[in-house]
Structure formats: structure tokens, C-alpha cells
Image (cartoon, rainbow, N blue to C red; front, side, top):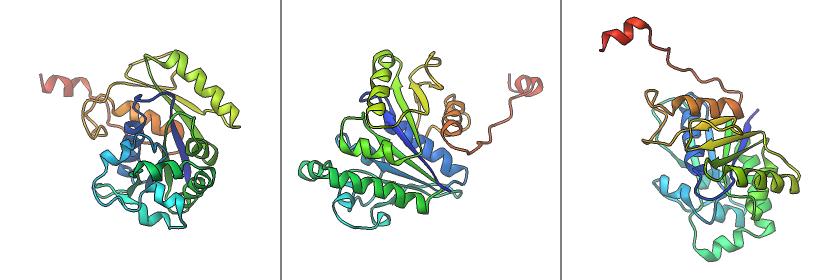
Length: 234
């Protein structure tokens, strides 16, 4: 059975797209076939991180009965699982039509379609203020709120209220750009390199915690260095 997760930004620019993508890389790197769908039509940030043909994009798929596979772009992975993304990359006119209720309903169907073919489906979701965002949070099993440390105090409660308004709630809270936060299930330091899933990076443990919080996947982590290992390289 597939796992479906919406990573919901509580505000713009909090690192939702990056966290969604890095979580996908970590899952695929551990042998889990993973799809990333883009509900952030306004910023189209996922398209900036994907190379290759983006036609049809996710907005086009929402406006006609086209199989999801035609809009998926495979991201390079060394062996292990498949990582495929379906970004938004469209002119304003199509973006506007794709936000209509019927098109948003189709977006929910694309999530279901992805879940039939991938072990994990992640949805890059903007603040809950548009039909696609509502479709995303109501179509998945798990909703995770994302916010940066500076805006968490006001933005997280607002997002919780909006989720309640559409009949769902958050299962996890991730606060970015900090090493600790009282409301965070996982606090995520600032990303310093790309990809951030290399085991030697400081953020690797936080990404593992994120993935293990919203999925049933257990990520293998490096063994801590012993005293002799630490001395050997000094």
C-alpha cells in the first residue's frame, strides 16, 4: 500500500519545495519508488529543480484526461528506487484554469493514480488558500506543516485552522532553519549543499527523522564514530 504525504507550507519561502525534494531523494536512495507532485502552481519552484521535458506539466494533466506517466520526469538516482516529479510549468492563463474546482478535483485523482504506481507519493503544497492546495491536503493520508523558525508562532496556528476548515488536520510539524523549536516534531537546520542526502552532511539526521515521521520507512544511518576512529584522524 502506498504512502501519500502533503508537505504544506505555512507561508511562502519556508523551504517546502526543498524539503519535499530532499525527502524524495532520501526515500528513492533507500529503494522506495517515489513520486513528487507539484500543487504550488504560483511559484513553480519544483520546475526550477528538474531538468528535461516539462510538457505536459501537472496543470495540463489537470485540464485533460492524460495519464500521469506522461507528465513525470525522472530525476537522476544511482540505482536504488525511482524518483519522478510532475512539476507545474505553465503560462498564467493555464495556471488560472488549473485552479478551478474541476481541475483541482482532477489533481486529487492524479495523487490516487500516483499511489497505484509508486510506493510513496509526496505533494509539494503551498499555503492552504487555493483549490489545488485543498485538493492535496484532502487526498493524502498524512499532512505535514512546514514553517521557518521566524514565522512559526503565527503561521502554524493559522495553517492548523485552515486545515480544520477543510476537514483535515496535521500529523506532523517541521520547522526549518533552526536546530530546535518547541512546536516541531523535527527541527531542520539550514540546507548547505545539494543534494543534502549525503551521509556526511549535518542535515542528514534531520531528513531521516522527517521521512521516518511521515512514512513507515526506516532509514539506515551511519554508525557513530568510536573513540579510536576519532583519534585516528586527528
